[in-house]
Every structure is written in C-alpha cells, then in structure tokens.
Length: 459
Image (cartoon, rainbow, N blue to C red; front, side):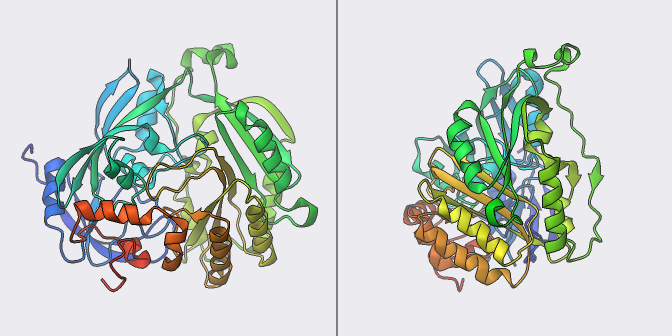
C-alpha cells in the first residue's frame, strides 16, 4: 500500500442502466489492491459486490443494505507490450480509455460491446460479446487477479476452473483487481462497411448465414413494428478493419487517430411515455428508409460503427423515470423460428421498441454461466411496464424449450426456476463459487432475486 487512504464510504441509491429497481448501498472506492483486500475482508452480513461503470442493465451491480466496491479509482493502465500485443490494466479502466491509448499504437481489444463505457472488470464479469461472432471477451484474457473472501488474492489463468467461473460470473466469485488482455492488431481506426436492407427477418438470417464468413463483424438492426410479409425487415451491416489503402489519401497520415467526442446529453426531465407505439413506429420507419438499399465498402469510424448510442450521453433517460428493460436471448442453430415468434409477439402486443438487434454466434462460451452459444441472439430495449410480465415470461418458456437462455447482464426480471434449465453448468459454477466464498459474503440484488448461490432466497 502506498499510504493513500481510500475515499470515504458513501450511502447511495443505485440502479442498473435500465434505471429500474433502485436500492441503497454503502459504496466504497478503493485506490489499490490492499484497499480491495481490506474491504472484502470486512464485508458485513449483507455482503459485497463490485461495480464498474454501471452499464449492466438490471440489478447485477447493486446490493441493497450491503456494500458495493466501485472501481472508479482503479483506472490505471499498468503495462503495454507493443511487440506482443498485450496490455495490463486495473479493473476500472474503460474500453473508451483502452481505445484512446491503444489505437494510435495499432492495437485494440479483441472484443468490444455496443458501448465503450464499460470497465474491463465488468467486461470480464459479463463475458461480453459485441458484434464479433467468433468469441467473447474472456477468451482474450491472459491473466487476472481476483480478491476472494476465503483465498485472498488469487491469480487466475485460462487453465483454472475458477477463471471460467469468474468470467461471466456476475461479480460473485471475487473482486477483479487487474487483468492482462491479448489485443487485436489494426492498421487504422476505421471500419470498411457493407450495408443492405432485407425484406424480412428470414431474408436477413439467410444473408447472414451465406455471407458472414467474409466479415469480422456482423449485426442487424430489426424493425419490430413491421407486419405481414415485412415482419422483421432489417438493416444488415457488416464490416472489417480498414487498411490505409481503403482511406482517401489525405486521411492516411492520421489513419490511427481516435479522439471521439460525445456532443449531446439527454435531459434528466424527459417524461414517461415518450417511447410509445406511435413514436416507435415512426422511428423504425425513418431508420429503415434512411438506410441505403445496398452500399458497399463505406468507410466509417470505430465509434459510429460500434457505439452509435455513445454519441448521446445518458441516452437511457429517454425512457423516463420508470426506466426500461433490455430483453436479450440466444437460441441454438435450428431454432431460428423462436426469433420470428418473438417478433410476432412483440408486434401483436404493440410493445414499443426502437432498438432491436440481431446477431449470430459461432462459438459456445467457455464460462460456466456464460451467455453465448452457437446460434442466434436478439436484444430489444422496451419501456418498463407491468404489461411486460406475461409477454416476457412467455418468451422465457419458448427460449428454454428451444435450448436457449437469457443474458444475465441484461436481465432484471427472470423467474429463478428457469435458471438451471438455461444454464446447465450452474451447479459447477455454484461449487466453484463455494470453494472461494464458503459463507456467501459476495452478494448482489441479482444474486438474491435469482438465488444464484442456491442457498435459498430468504437470505
């Protein structure tokens, strides 16, 4: 320890990015590894959970009446190996910081999600996947140090079972202190994109299966308000990293520059009901019409390609004070009908959504309760409402019957009795968790809601 005291603890109301189910916790902001060890050792009866930048949509990084360890001050880039292509960082370093530091050197993280405002610790705990269909974030983690209640500081590499329990483990196997990441080499900070409209969701999926092999990244925006023969009409965008030869000559000297700015912020006073069937339909129609029918080899920056919503600060406020739910599921290949049925049900109930994203996975997560499996994943943002309960409960049953699962990082309302069916390695994960936390000192609101520990929901 360098002698610097941690910040004083504060009592705070916390929510996930969806802004639902706020709870109060005591928030601690350690400055170094020794502070983390001290805090984990002092966890009280309600336990402790780590929190990064708060981009989990539900209650994974909340702990009502207990302690929360924020990684706000654990934001140092510790070492960069430019020759090897690796970086070691504290867990609170954001992907935005990594991109700003690494892209000018010709490197970037192997996997990034739909926002750059995610901490490395959070990316590991959620085993994020992004638009990259061949692997998830933890596949590129070479080592991490984790502070556990029973074993203290442990250094984990991919050959350890606890590594894959921590990856995707929702912060319930320890507090990640730092990690070493393997990087992807790039020549520019641009993406060469191909964009095309598809007539319906079946057409979209056929084009993805037929053509995705030519691209590193692939994603489709889906119109959830379209009906009949146009159900699930989509805008499919795929891309590869640009080379200097792909850029106009005047831009080649600055090919690796990356200094994006967020220009706008959503006001805090936006009313409930702004996202409704009428506005959702108008937005979807506008978005589909403004997209090109077919455009080849268009060059755009990494930020607009990967992080379009990062251009609007606090965009989650547009759903008003009631907040929103993101529902994301994955089903295996051969169960494509579930995607179509889900879109039919959203349309039949006139559930408003202006953001629906369809992607493919070509890998199964190595994490014990990791989300990806070879197949199809659909994610939708929906205004929070009691009317969602029967709709989403019914979709859960459909997903389970098809051998699929929902994404815990996005979840705020799953019924706990479905968890084991969705995550068949849940008992293995529970055993790994118990081996380093025999007294359940690592807790969260999600843990209690879903009884992730298997110890009963009364605790």
